[in-house]
Image (cartoon, rainbow, N blue to C red):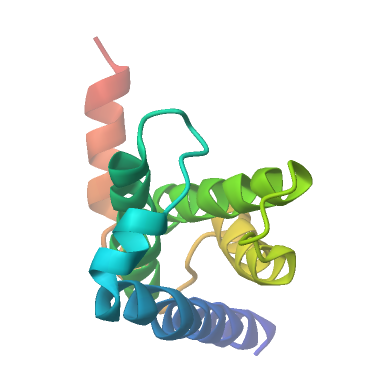
Length: 140
């Protein structure tokens, strides 16, 4: 019973975190794409447009993968990194950096990077294939 509750909790965490990041981050960025692209900061020093594309990929593609439970641990890392960049910008005094939102998004994705997706995920269904692939990559 406890394992089932844990797996249902991880499912709720994955779906909830992805729904929130899509609703409050991706949707506004896509609706106001030109303005967002023009005003997006460059925390990595690679240019505003590439930084914007990387943030879109992390928040959009990676959060979708996490919601599906596909490559969950790997997909959660770019989202956490993006939120850490927001926190770094806030520490440097960037007015547009929302510390509370960054922390609230980083927390569930950090937990998922540490725990994995749980039983109700594509990762669970593909675990045998993952093991075979890993065995091929590790053995010479």
